[in-house]
Image (cartoon, rainbow, N blue to C red; front, side, top):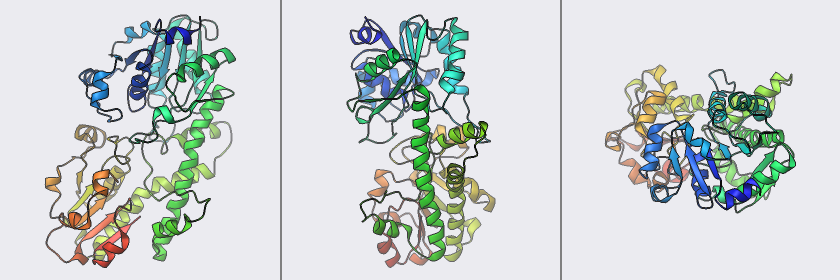
Length: 439
């Protein structure tokens, strides 16, 4: 009997290693079809899941409280499984090179608890070759087992989009790969237990690894193109979003909008590709240029904030600026690689201390990760400038008079609105006489 059949009949268990925005939803989904162990070293996170609290807001407290996932922070519990899915972060270092410590550490922990007959599938985004050239030797060293003889490996890049309630794990086609045809079929069959959209069998592990970094690099380049247009159109006095609205009337327009590119995927993954390509002697031009443009956007927005304050007759240093939104994207509490924080950093050179509010974000994470206080909206009033930084649904629902309530008593021409996400109607705001700028 295959491992897939044993999992399906609940004779063997699946273990998720890493229970963040990616790993936790996967664990919960598989728990509806199989026995699942959910492992994470973060004891506070495990305690919260056991208490029915979903800090990621990906599946919700009610689902977490009802799931049959065996949440644990004890590595020894991993010995109870035979099919492993590694879903730990793969960030970058300060010098933009890949930080493989999380995936290497997870491999060491897993290797110490690996048994014969197991299959290990990595979901963490990496450059081609990491799974076979870096992770496998660690697994072999720690376990004393031989890959291809005692255990098998596969790779299936995560495609979960945090905060997206439409494109979910179950309805996004899954790329799967294995070290040999037998492993590929086992991996594909296991994932098909929960992936309603089906799976795509990649020709090799390296192909699957490459597909992930390429799909996010493609998005990064497209956004960079629009961001470059936005910077040029700003000098021309042309509204970029109006140009895009006109362009989108053509059937083959891609529909990208200007914006800040943060988070754990699009703002990071291209650097993995660039790193490996350059290590092999190829200098990436388009992808590197796109990354540079998108990395420069926080400073560009910061410059516009200062410029608009000056044009409104405000003393920049003494102005009260309120940022609405701290996360890297809308309707999601994830603050990893948030470019909003880089705008705040830019404004520090003017000795400005903006007020930062966001009901979605965790104040402790913001303080620990960036050193900024996350304040209540009670402290957002009497503003000279409001920055609509993240398009959370509650922000999109607010009318212009509701936003106006956050300003002090002054003429509309002295009230500065910086609309990074194009939340407000351009004609309505400018007609009312506000000092308005949008990306």
